Amino acid sequence: MIHWGDIAAIVFACVTAIHLGLVKAIEDVAHRELRIVNCPKCFTFWSVLTYTIITTRNAITSLAISFLCSYLALWLELFEGFIDTLYKNVYEKIYPTSDDTASADTDGGSSAGALS
Image (cartoon, rainbow, N blue to C red; front, top):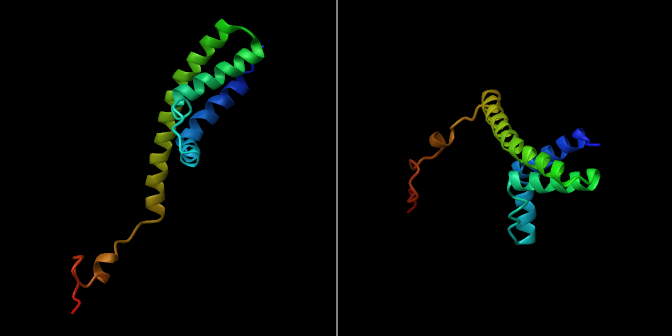
């Protein structure tokens, strides 16, 4: 029996871990690039394939589901990027940034200030 909720959770976890930068942080700590894990399509494909082969023991169905989930991972990644853009726009409206640094800078921003 295929557990679709578990598969959806795997897809979400794989894409979101990459989107939030958790995989990049692991790579930085390990001082090694994890090529299969830092790609949402690849990470999703191999994670879903491993899970479905273990739970269903049906290689053909597992392969098809893994390819489908890998394709859906692209769209989830795009959606998460869109949500980020919306968040940034709303955040800037709620907390507008003020550019007071130009008025406080007496030398007009040049690196050679008015020092004697």
